[in-house]
Image 1: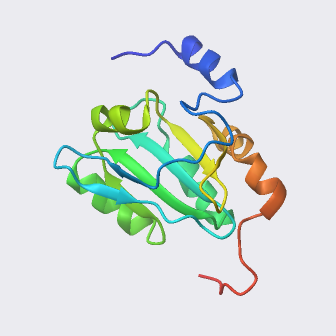
Image 2: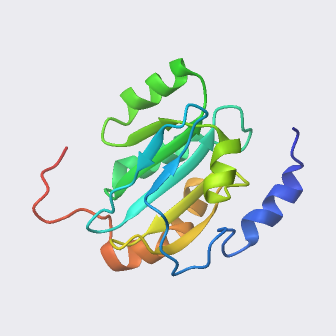
Amino acid sequence: MLVDKKDYRNILKKRSIAPFPIGNIIQNKFHYSRNSAEAEIEWGETGTLVFFMSKTCEMCDFSNIESYSKLFHFKTYIFVEANDEYIEILTEKFPNYKIFKSNFSILLKELNIEVVPLVYALNKLGQLVAAGAFNSYESLVRRILPLVEVFGTGRIIHESDH
């Protein structure tokens, strides 16, 4: 499916396109693939980010997540519609993140994920504090701003540098 970049930018201008109202608690167990595999999200002490991406999505630029990974230390999960080889590349690139080979028709049913790239920012209770599509590192940081304003980079004082 081809996406008109102008229409996509209009989506990005919205404050949040989350399928759940800000403040709702997101289920921490859900199916993400056709083989009925179930993900379990553990909420991070300073917050959790959940990315939804696709290798075939023209707007899904994984370098934005790479830039994020150099500064931020929130518990992070990435659900990606991609082949096994690409999942392996991402797993090597982001060893501290949980990466899931996903099917978006399943995630649509489970979490109402309709657009990628999408990020959810959740507090330590699993409440959605921010969400939205992003197409640059700057727009990603704007989407997660509620966590950044409270927890900075998300690093816990007793964590060691990795």
